[in-house]
Length: 224
Image (cartoon, rainbow, N blue to C red):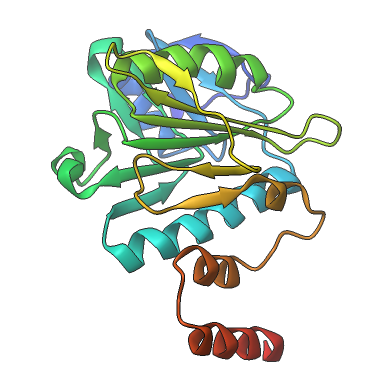
């Protein structure tokens, strides 16, 4: 499929069938998404973006695994929404145990239950507008938009209401509490530290592990 190789400016949209998009994703190093018959290429993410993805993935993974709530993935992982004719690759996506039948050996066919997008310079409109309405219509129950860019630090959390529309969720004392992940909470100020906290220690705090376990984890992390 070498004839499908592309070298286009970031965020360029190229008309391409879904079948050719699938062939193309196996040959490119770029992040590619497919929307309404067009392939979109994206700028490679900056270090802070990737640090935030790694931090939130680690924290969520520990919680999801500990409580056996489902599965967690990071991009590149195709989420195909057939009725909207889109294939997206969210930064982080969670699929609850009740939704695991949507996962095939190739992709997620249908919506994730929770999606986290980390904003980059080129993704502001895409994350806050295009994907916002796509995820809402697709039925993604919970959507986080985290913007870690210096001077723009902001986190927004959205949950579907009984009309299938996203409603913003306010923080309580700076803490966000998830609806899709029962018992999970996030101190949003953690996200803006220049050195992100240790996810293992934060997980112990969120999960309310016994003090003896927390002390052991503290000792372990100091040795590493």
